[in-house]
Length: 297
Image (cartoon, rainbow, N blue to C red):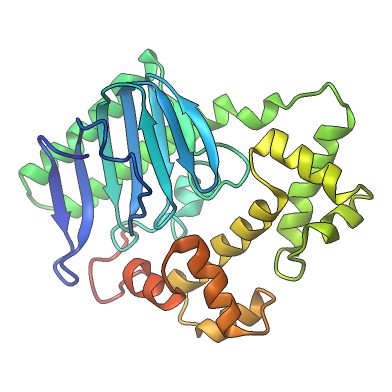
């Protein structure tokens, strides 16, 4: 839970959180399914345990930094008290999709189907992240000229630094190579999902394209990504749906059709199963509010 020394910037139009910097002090704050309508960065400086993101579970230890997208379900189950820092920001304040060329964190820190949404910040990295969070907190506590520009700049640097660290650590490069065929199959599977997720929703279709049985492909996916093949396909569809909902004015029916759903209501049920809210509510609460606090470049 963000408790002591928490500072919050509020969108004056929607009266909702735009940016928040605080400290982690409560070991039980996230021991249930959480879904926030903003991006969450939780830096566990001291603490061990496991965390769940979507349907997968991963261990964490001192120095772990977690990254969650709006309405992504997550849970943190610590073995003891947590100590750390937290950073929250809404897409109205900074939209990572709109600034992906500058920041390049989408698909690295956020919306990555294949890697845990986490990095390890070693002692040598700590000073950089601490300084950036302190600068954000200082600026929020004493607003002056060009406050928003400075805050967005600090946030950009924070995300770029974290993205670089994630690329350096690159868990995907350490695939089990006992079976020489598996890395090829995994890379091909990722490419096929990216190319065909709008038209092919069944695991059996991908297994057929890879000339492998659905059971064998499912086992490989579960072993390396800690997710079922169905989960991987569904998550990719939902990521695209969210992108269309908060960046465009397309009707839900049009988005459903573009993603391979002939029935708008079936698509809405499919989306709600993942995000726990309807597509329209997601758009209303997460979508970039062009009349409110803008995402600045």
